[in-house]
Length: 104
Image (cartoon, rainbow, N blue to C red; front, top):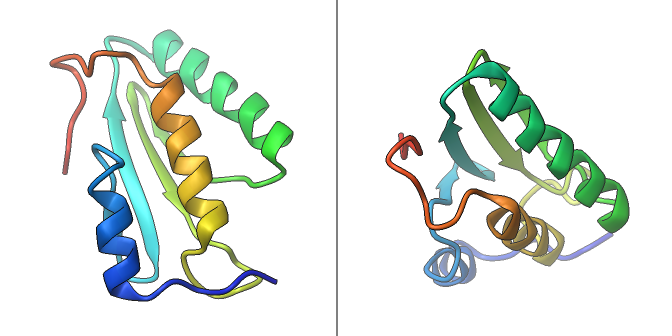
């Protein structure tokens, strides 16, 4: 089990993870794509990365919108594993962030 990070540590780390925000005991990021196929292509890339890192985000898909939520369920909060996965998701996200990305 990993150590849950303090709010201050999470906020400091989020400064280096564009698009991510703290929401309760999780961190999350929202994306919006031009269509469903682009959204699913992105989600499938995330699935492969999650398997490789053995750390899986909660993924909510609504047509062309994708919300990624990270929490270390076994620890009960955000840990370094979540921050690493958020960084990997950012690497796979359309770059530079397009006008289609939404920060809600």
